[in-house]
Length: 103
Image (cartoon, rainbow, N blue to C red; front, side, top):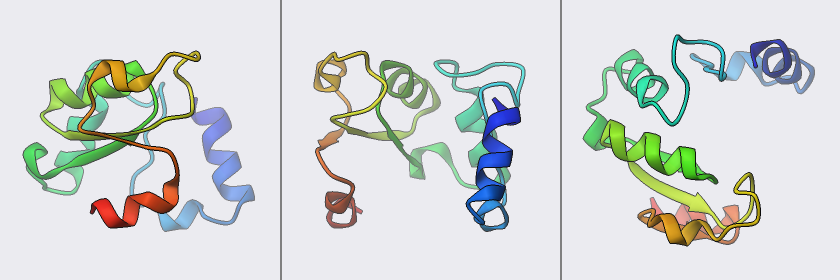
């Protein structure tokens, strides 16, 4: 929710580093609907097929697939203890340090 996200980013001193911030309540629909992802792609004038989402949940995989994004998931996070690999993302990483080699 924006009421939590925006103050947190400001407190961390990184709010101004973002040109767009989309929380679960920013738009009319939220993940797993593709609207937040498509809105982001449109904001940056990027074709969805050229976009990639980094996620950690079933709703991230579903939203990415529906939007036409590639999806890389972290093996840990908000997936209620279920193995995210079962959702068949493009790639599963165990550490953020692995991400650089995948881009």
